[in-house]
Image 1: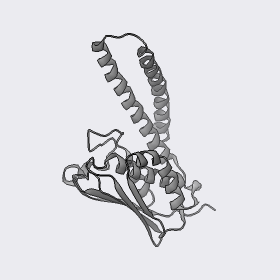
Image 2: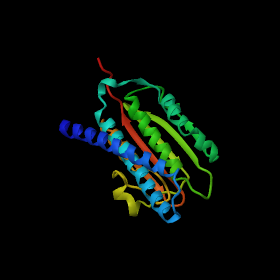
Image 3: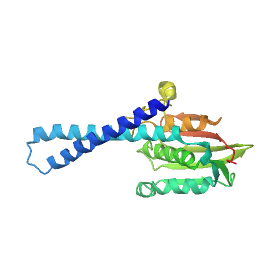
Image 4: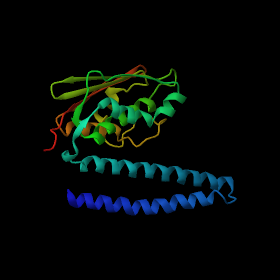
Length: 226
């Protein structure tokens, strides 16, 4: 595992350098007078470079999640962690006139790895926004409850929904997307599942195409380091 990790870091570093040069060259090309026919090909290369960059960043996220240690466990407030994650999307939520209703009264504090919990919230928020319905404003409700040493977070939206009969067996595979009309790398649900199951948790999905989805993530508390 350590050998593979070192190899992945080295590969990501080398790819990043090449990708940086590629994107810089494309930026400089924009300043030149280029025939429309050639410019179309340049736009294709530009989109491919952006896509490659997104995949690279997603791979790095997977590595970071796998590399986090239980020694960084601390007592955290899920409400504050969510507020931090929400701030990243506040402009988009306001621009789209989306409504987000939260209830974290069921959980005051939690012994967990903060970067894990923020990743769960960030990816669920991102998916809700990304797969919102074009026919109506997004309405997202988030409920937090606790059962013994487990915290349960339920994200319910009125978005596009997912055809579970068609995509159910691919739902948590990395780099899987359910719509060609959305951007993204398709690693969000994979990361959430990996994080939750790492300490005896789980993720469950209920969805109806055209009506919306409900994601329930159950995480188990870590023991605070001595």
